[in-house]
Amino acid sequence: MDNEKYILIVSASEEKRERISSIFYKQGDHTSDAIDHINAIDKLIRRKKNGFGLVLTDINKQTKGFKLLSGMKKSKMWYKDLPVIGMYDRPKDKLRWSREGGIGSLHSIFFPEDLITIVDAFYNKKLVDRT
Image (cartoon, rainbow, N blue to C red):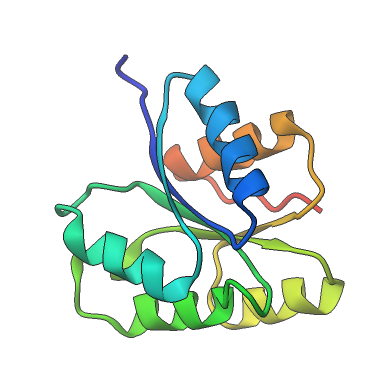
């Protein structure tokens, strides 16, 4: 499939990672998952350049999405400019995400169509923010 996507999903919730992976699997896309920012950076480092096209991360205390974003942006590695979409629970986290350089955001409770739309938009170089 020409339009396959390679997405890194970062969430402390195994159920959520599996649910999101399932959505993209049905689209013919590929996913890998990580439980927190440390695991995510490790997977990014081990992956070849351009191995992932996007990171989708929870913004919460368990996953430490803000630390992941900061670590990626400060890095000199290939993934420093990779789009990172944050999934938030609290509106104040959405605002902080934008201020700290997060490209897109999506509420943690979402419809599959909204998730697909925002990811497709980033792969097509458009900026979309679903609230």
